[in-house]
Structure formats: C-alpha cells, structure tokens
Amino acid sequence: LLALPDGVLSLDAHWRCRHANPAAQPLLRPSLSWEHVAGQSWHEVLDDEWIEALLPWMATVMRGEAGQFTLQRGHDDQAHHWRVSLLPERSGDDVVGAFVLLRDETAMQQQQAAWHTQQRDLQQRLQHQDAHLAEQQARWQALSGSLRDAAIFFLDTHGAIQDWPSSAERLLGYAAPAVLGTTGPDTPEHPHPLPADTALALERAALLGQAESTGWLRRANGDRLWAHWVF
Image (cartoon, rainbow, N blue to C red; front, side, top):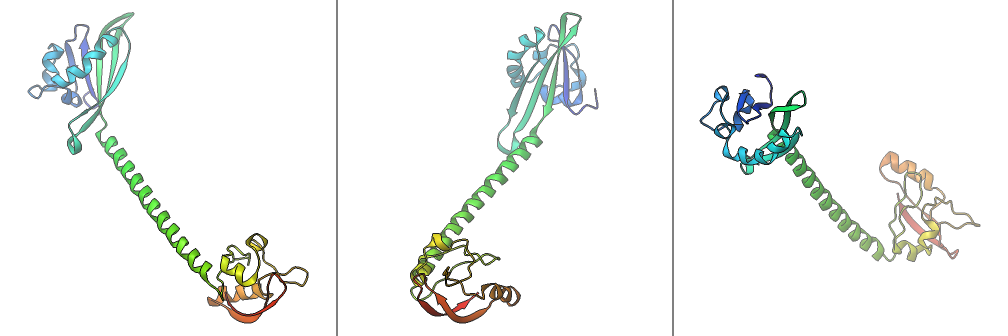
C-alpha cells in the first residue's frame, strides 16, 4: 500500500478513516499527515474542497455501487488534474466501508494539451501553406493564360499533357479535353500539339536539366507552326 503510486484512503461504514498511504496526502488537510488519520472522522481529515466533491458520491458507494469522477484544482499552469474512484468494501452482502482511490493525471493532461496545441499549430501552418499555394497557382494561371505568342504547359514524366492553359489553346487551337492526358505523337490522321521527338527531348531534359529544339508543330486546324520549344 505504501508503495502504490495512487492515493488510497480507507473509510469504515461510519466514514471514519482507517488508513491512508503517502500518495493520498493531497486529499488531506494541510495540517494533517497521512500517518495520523486513523480513527478520525472524514470531515476532520479531508480538505474541505475534497469533502464537497466526494459527498454526492458517498451514499452511492455505501449502497454498494462504485463511482468515479475527475476534479481540477488550481488554475492555468498551477492546475492539478485528479481522477477519483470510489469502491465499496464488502463483507458478505454488507457494505462495511469504502475505498477512495486518487490518481494524479496532471502530466497526462499536460501532454494531451501540448498535443492538441501542436495539432492546432500544424493545422494552421497547413492552412497557411494551402492558401499560399492557391495564391501562387492563381498567379501562375494568370501568367500562363495571358501569353499571346507563346504557351507554357506541363507534361508528366511519361510525356502526357497535364496542364493546358488558355494561351496554349489560343496558340495551337486544341481544346483542353482533347489533349489532357495524351502523349501524341502528331500524325496526319491524328494531329497533336507535341513534336514527334518529345520522348527523346524528355530524356535529354532529365539528363541535362533542359532540352531545346525548333521545328514544325501542327495546329488543330492542320496549319503548320514553326516553333522553338524548351523541355
């Protein structure tokens, strides 16, 4: 009993203290030590705030039913969080006393509060990043869409078109639904905006950082366009 990390206070059927362990000291009046509570009435032993908290539960426990509640004492950084369990002590069918078990959950509450703070901060950072990315994307779309004699669009690593801004549609005539996700190549039967050597250009770009070339591109209406492109 003395080595238990949780406080234990034992009461008889008349609510007199029988014994307590060191961890039960927070229940007691400041002038009393856990070693000197035996034989005293609980209202002489317990701190007034604890009496007020325990009183609604005592009749229930003396009827043979267990109970549990939590209590915060103090405020802000000085607050302590306690979990209190009340268990009836039985002798046969009779309830002959009660055990008050006290557990200090302050450290756990502080850890949970710190975790919630970290989660809130992370969520705020993610929201800020999302807003920043949305702003950057809007600026990029405004830039790429405003080009007149040029177009900027994205390909994935396999050469499929992933982005088709309005500038590309104006320059080459292809509507976005017709080219998004496609790789070509450009053939007389199936016009396509990408040059025939796109796969080779992507390999060079992956190796050297970029690849440039000039040549003919085909517009959607079949017209040819002499162009300079950079991958």
